[in-house]
Length: 252
Image (tube, rainbow, N blue to C red; front, top):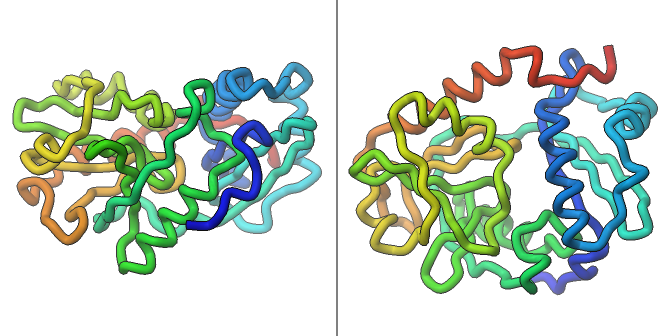
């Protein structure tokens, strides 16, 4: 594992979807989480507003039509903006497990500056020919390298981790009401080996991936080979993308 080059309180960040034509997806939600996480990291965001972010983005437009925008705020209140293309979206993937870092209570679950272990986890997965690293602590899945794992059990309950090391998911929050309307129950708990081994389906959702259908973990098949949750999540996200109210115009 790469040595962490900076402490967790050095910065806070969020990553969201962008389109040069439509703007920023769920910007208000991302900035709200950024503020909440910054408060826990003791980073002052009072002078960082939606308008100030938009003005900076207008001065530094992306070089491609759509992708992901990372907004990072340092403890010295320097703002770093970076763009990257979408690589994989709405795909069936293989996952591998990777040890989750364990942070102090006020740092755990935030998008903080010591993110190297998550980059290492993703590199580890890619070196094994997989697309997703699932972060594991005390024999439970607590997160993934860039998205949130969801486990569907045989009773129609969608489980996501209640670990303090899990990062709250803006994508899941945006989908929650539609998943409930479709008849699913959503529950937090421990994503332990027994639950995962007996699940009907496993997916992961996030700004950078849309929805991944997880077909295997560490070489072992997962689920019953169905795709109803994967298909539903992809449909819900497409509906969200098609709604102009979910986008904040920046460059047009």
